[in-house]
Image 1 (tube, rainbow, N blue to C red):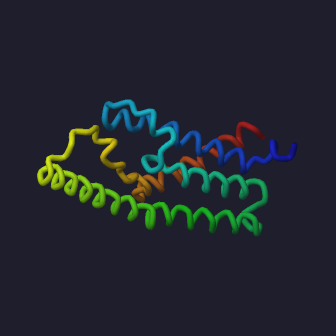
Image 2: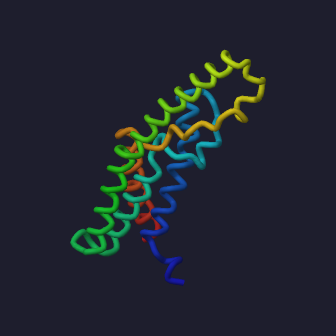
Image 3: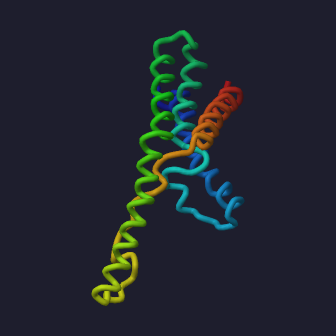
Amino acid sequence: MELLMNFPLWASITAIFFAQFIKVPIQYLATRKLDWSLLTSTGGMPSSHSAAVTALSTGVALETGLGSAVFAVSAVFAIITMFDATGVRRQAGEQAIVLNQLVADFGKLVQEAKGWQQKPEQEKRKELKELLGHKPIEVFFGGLSGILLTLLLHYLLS
């Protein structure tokens, strides 16, 4: 029963769902294309990872105070997660773009050289996930949405 009363946990989970859901209308406004696959994809605006860890830290701060050891752990966890989202994961996504282009170019070469049999493109290759990480602005707004959402939930539920 205590799990159901764990405010930082529920704030964090709510922030994940909110950030994932809001990606759909944001993408629609930017491209005029409705893409429901964004609900379960990584990357994009805002960062659900950043929203989750900042919501968790904010919830912990509200319950235990800024001077608690638990807040310190959650804050460092949030910083590392957000740094990773803009660093390693972003670079992996950029490498995936280059690798996908190399695969496409190689595919064209094979097609020209050997008269590649006509198959659907999806059967020929499976593209690497290019949207792994986040731009710093995506991490910023993910973090901001996590903090603001948690403060709103705390206000509404207290």
